Length: 523
Image 1 (cartoon, rainbow, N blue to C red):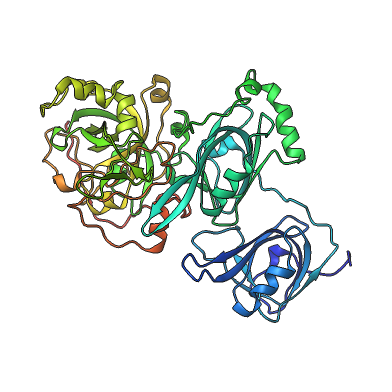
Image 2 (cartoon, rainbow, N blue to C red):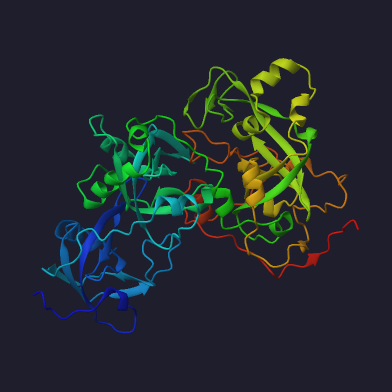
């Protein structure tokens, strides 16, 4: 059967009705309803042929589901014949192939002995992910040393609660990236990491997705498809361990796994983030995006306050009743709150100015003190501590999240997710070539002209970022916290998924059709 005449996966399309491929089932999973009666509605697969080409395949006919669950084994090679090629238009693509394979009741399959790669890895270097140089056109594989491992945490979304898990892996040069898992994949990974694992522990993540929307190229799972392996017996694992000797001290550093997951990118990644634009270019964004820019802090916006009472994890608790407060992140009762920073700063560059919001962790780093320390100084008074003026006049390279609210309400503050004041970062920073006209502003832009610092006051109701993106170990994926005075439009399914980090990361979308207005300049 080895010389059997068959088609290649790369050629599959809708140009003919009869295809015959021979492929290994790299991954098979079952998708079921999330609410009772939890019926299975789809069997999904990733297939690979002898040339390494991948394609997604699925069976969704209810009467055929049991057959595909029982008779197709993950890891085996099969001959598949008489199936339908359908466009791969999913928001979350598992493979880069233009088409997907849909099996039906007349599809024929049987085991085959063709030599097809056993694993067919699609490894992407950790450094490329950390530097935002990797794409996520399809599911990827990643290999690295376990650096930090968090706890399994309950995440409540609407009426459902799912498990989430965060951990950090690094390459042999100790360049780290963060992994955010949810659902069954998170549970399986948590249970697979046992106390008797040898150190340094190597982690292989199969069929993962790069989530560029989270500010540090986080890796997340693609629903049920992703698999996490600890110290698997693979040549690639042995090769990685052998390379530890290239970096002095790396072997010792990986000998202990921290319980604190590092969430921030290294400062150098700000220099390689794909969308580095001046303030005036933000007005051309048409969808939620992350951008990096270089600005100078002009002043504190005192009218919006500077602190709030938060849970020790930094999340603002909600009142369940008159006495009970609960943290939606920790999913437990909050007995005592702590002062946390929430500081608005007006910033500017040569093209305009806007408002940026620093939540607790970033504000503490910027101010070099804690909110508790400043709260003790001012006591019960409403005065602003003079320490909040420390950053005024400083130049920073900053990554901000331009959210739907910022596009809908142009005066709203943009939440800071990363920043650096290091001189070498400031000196090396350059803008990416995203849009040609850096001086063109757009009507209803969140950016104001920098010709005068005494700009008109913004609407207070909308000059607050709509959720606390200052995340801790348990908050890589957090519920959206809605302000009571703010109305939000209903979100479509893709936008709802993005709130918990499931939607596919994509580059910012720009519009060149909006009417522009000129920025007044000082001569």
